[in-house]
Amino acid sequence: ERRGSMSRKERKEEKKRAKKLAKLEKKKYKLVENQEKYGATKDSENKRKGGVFMKITFVHCNLLDGNENMILQKNVNIIVENEKIVSIDKDNLEGTIVDCTGKFVCPGLINMHVHLSSDGLYNHKNTDSKIARLVNSNPIGRYIGFRICQSFAYKELMSGVTTIRCVGGLSDVDSQIRDKIKQGKLIGPRMLVANRAITVENGYMHNQGPME
Image 1 (cartoon, rainbow, N blue to C red):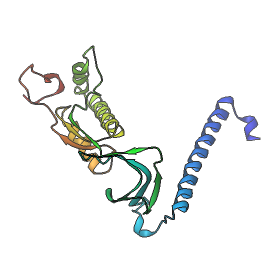
Image 2 (cartoon, rainbow, N blue to C red; image 1 turned 45 degrees about the vertical axis):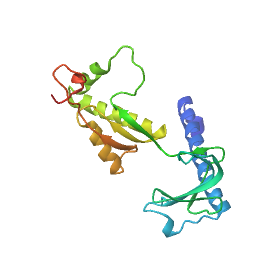
Image 3 (cartoon, rainbow, N blue to C red; image 1 turned 90 degrees about the horizontal axis):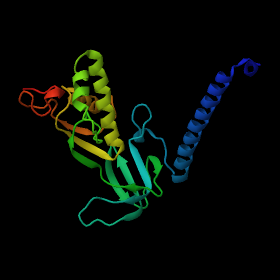
Image 4 (cartoon, rainbow, N blue to C red; image 1 turned 30 degrees about the horizontal axis):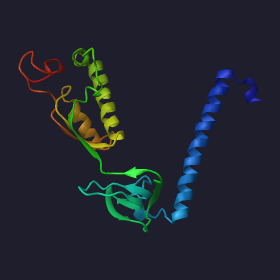
């Protein structure tokens, strides 16, 4: 009865919600199936508050360990506990199981020269300084600037960069983002920050709110 009274738009939205729920259920089933397959259990020693596991096993990995003379290690299991690797072998399975079949695991990359006020893509119009002036001009602009820089920090992490060194940005935005990441309020890489650049009047980065 309800379906007959729904508009075309409402039916479309209902179908989208149903698809989303089905997708979530499928992911949940796969996780449980993997845990049963490898004998992992949800005991109190293996989880944090809120039910997030402290131990994770990445199975069937192709590992590049980052050593000078490294060779590809195929089909290994990597156990992570409290965000640190504690074991690499082919037998042990503990905590939450993550299947990495066909995937590669390597140490996180470090980006030594970052300006979070820019995404690093080539900008032939050189509009960065104009955007920086606009962002620093009022509270709404500063909020937008914060969100832009936050999104670029997140983008770095999703690209495999786990540590960045920020060498000049918008006011103290970089340190704000760094602190929120440390507090667990934002997702992003480890950050070493300098905040505002130091320059002479009308010098390099003068338009991005530097200290003179």
